[in-house]
Length: 120
View (cartoon, rainbow, N blue to C red):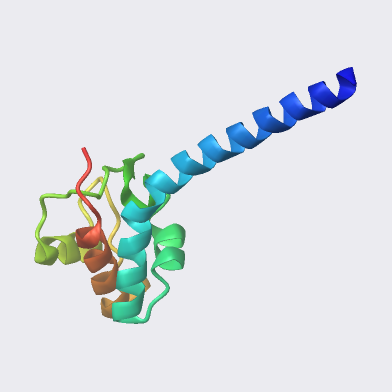
């Protein structure tokens, strides 16, 4: 009888932890996931893969958090300035990506960044 109570309590505890953890995980997702889906649909480019292999080294959580580079969500740069920054980089801070990615992917990434919700 005592074992059944322990198992029941343990099951409730595990379920609660999973439910709470899942709630917090999904609370963060829509912010960049929706922007990523919209940019992928619009440009027919794998934004997730392109960002992960080129940008995530410096810009955390798909642009939602700062890393070695600044947070991209909520950038004050215009779309044109964002395209310019990705294309030509920033001296001593960020390498240029136009030759690496090509114009289409640069524009897709810039649009994705501008679609991110502003978070400071």
